[in-house]
Amino acid sequence: MSLTPQWLDELRARITLSSVISRTTRLTKAGHEFKACCPFHNEKSPSFTVNDAKGFYHCFGCGAHGDAIRWMTDQRGLSFMDAVNELASEAGMEVPAPDPRAAKQAEQQAGLHEVLAAAQAFYRAQLETPAGAKANAYLATRGFDAHTMERFGFGYAPAGRQALKAALAQFDEPMLIEAGMRIAVEEKEPYDRFRDRLTMPIHDARGRVIGFAARILDADKKDAPKYLNSPDTPLFDKGRTLFNLHRAGPASRASGRIVVVEGQMDVVALAAAGFEDAVAPMGTALTERQLEMLWRLTENPVLCFDGDSAGQRAAMRAITRALPMLRPAHSLKIVRMPAGMDPDDLIKRDGPAALAALLDAPQDLLGTLWEHERDLLPLASPEDKAGLKARLMAHVETIADRDIQSLYRRDLLERFSAFAFPRREERTWQPSPPGQRGARGAPPPRRSDPVQLVRLRKSTGSRDALASAVVSGLLRFPAELARHGDALAHAELADPRFAVLIEALDRGERLETGHLATILAARGLAPPASDDYAALRFGFLAVDASAEQARADLDQAVGLLVERPALEKALAEATRQFERDLSDGAYAEQQRLLKRKLEFDSRLRQMASARAGAEMAAPAKPMAE
Image (tube, rainbow, N blue to C red; front, side, top):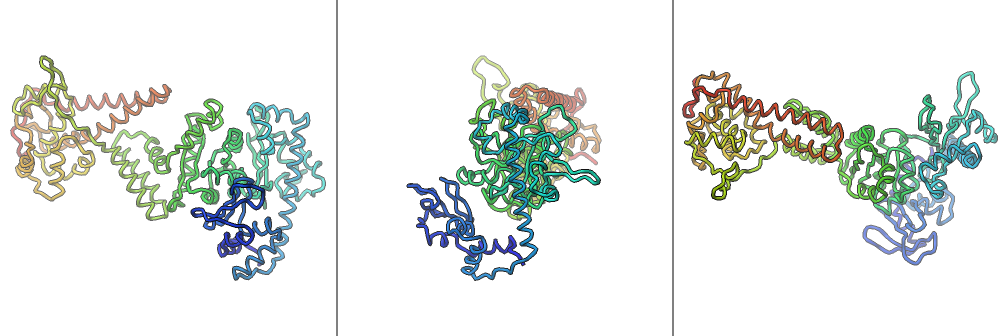
């Protein structure tokens, strides 16, 4: 049996870290942590912290970091197994007997670490040779300072297919292949994996080289990938590795955040600009394991992907991967970069302060999910909007935590309802100054004055006329109130008569014309009078219209009444977007919505005037079936 990760985690869980450290270092309670002057370097003010809940210590002065086992080896000077045996004895745990296979595997991994360390030394040396001129020229275009290039260990892999093998002759071929440094081809001689590329080492959490990332230097070479990472090996698993984690982890404890960018060069650019807490996945979407690694550092990692469509797709893949894993207090934050820009572009154009401002005000996961799905497809019809709702609810169903799932469902449904059925603004009448006439100053006419009703319709627009007509139609066909009640309730229309009718529906009142008219009158809201119909001129109010046709026209009128606010809101937003960036896409969207609005207004005018000149309906009463 071997010391499995599960067994070691159990050992750490049974040990109180502060009790171990306090034997040799004086600790002072500070909130949920303990503080002390660091035992690893001389200091006068305490910068060394111990967190029992998270099981680690950290010094913000020298960067010392570790768990109980690391404390015993680094501060006490014990070997790993001696430290494990002493802690296991205190915890009352029995140390498993050594496993010969595990010992052999550990020995093998130690050999691979040596291979990769030697390869890094070789690549670093090659950067200083004439052959490394292209790599140095590329680095110069990125503007990285010498300190940044030294920290990230840039190197150069020569173009020769056997250059690395010759330089690492002390290691046999199978070991070079297993370390991912050479490629074996059937019936052909193996060759170096990285050739004529800028190299950068990939480290594990302990800072040991476990692989390489390499960038092509010949821009005209189209038959090879721009970036190339080491393959999965006994040391390197791209789904369980985050680039720069060994440096960003300690930095994140000082900043209180961890920033996730798309690529390794983005990490370097951020570090050069002073953002030390950035990591990147290894050329793939974030995995469940990587998310768990991030959540160990902070409860809300910040995704800062590129502002192009690929970057936004990567952000959504991370969000959908995270949804089933959400738990209380653990989520993601998302920074939306300007269109077409990556973090390095923004820093070069506007300076580090611009990126810092975005990182300080990220959007939450729920808001990003809502905006992505809302903007994903056109929402021109009720079916389109129903599709939006279905997509949102499909995301919600993937959330495993029932409390979080319930809260997401409620919030997203509220946002959907506000979008699909927006609240209408209240209108109030104001008298015009003496001697002036105008739309806003026109006093509300008496309902019995058809001439004034026509003037009112012209001055306030057709929506008020439409609302009044729909009220009349619902009184004429009271059974239709049950069919349209839900849509009208969510629309929250400004005309108070709709609210009264919906309340009556919810109370189970009789859906009869006279009864509903009495309910309106009791609230001081008289239904439209007979003279109103002549002014309104909607087909479903005409005496000679069949019941079937009138109901169909009423359905259309209710749809228009509910649809218009959402259309106006979308057009206003598209106009604002076009004014902000003046892009062809924003202009096209504005014109598309403007065309829809013009078509809408045309339909409304046609409906309102279709019966012009014809005999209008008599006082509201049920139409004979």
